[in-house]
Image (cartoon, rainbow, N blue to C red; front, side, top):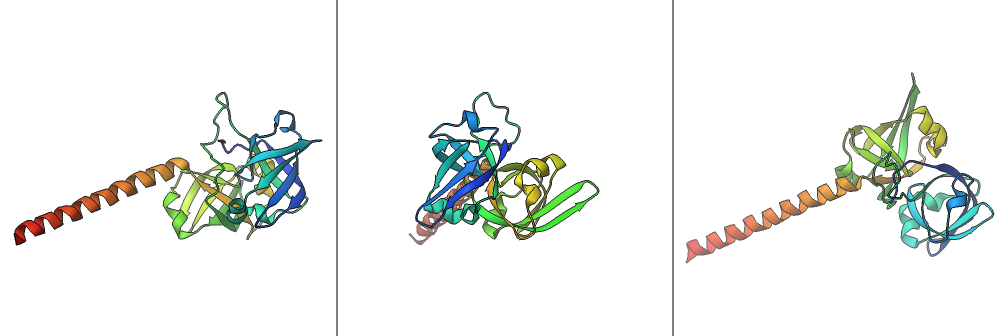
Length: 217
């Protein structure tokens, strides 16, 4: 589990990618001393397990499903990535609850920088829209952000200079892909309401059937 507060920008040093079996090796400084084999780590918002460590580098394997559903399949040597270690019970939760389970890949379709504002518009699928709420939380490439506004199949975020400087979003351009993870609380709320509605609909349909049968008899 993570908070969406990026600790360091790492640099990809080795890439071996394929739909069947993938591996990446990443250089880092700030968090390296605390890393251990088997630790969970967020790489551009994707929860991965450290399988190799040494000389300022750590390696992670990428499963086929992760390869298909995230931007990790586009990584190249020299690419910068957002890094965050998993939180502990003593960690300050400065962002929101992030699982590192990417829902889908979005695309930056507009960047507007003027008068201190850094507004990004990001597109998403129609299915993802049910989790998008104005002023709600969302994770973009592992970064906990607040949704500024909601549109049809896109949302906007307004980034402070600190976020641009200390995450990879400062190097992003229009048409770049980004990993999106919806707020897990939004998912649970949607599931709860959706299931209640379905159960109510089934109950009403069954009641109508019983009433109809009684009238016939």
